Length: 74
Image: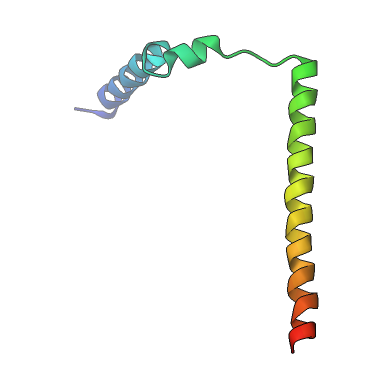
């Protein structure tokens, strides 16, 4: 088998895989997926930003407590 035959075989395998994309167990999800509207995108960004602020604030609070409290006990 020469290099041309191997490349054709590989090409056919790739084409067969791409034909099955919408038919597997994730096919329904892929078919239902759509681009979000601007309003949906902004809402997701706001919620994500709020979550980042809350988690960051909580981490900073823990950091402060770890630096301040040992001074009271030591």
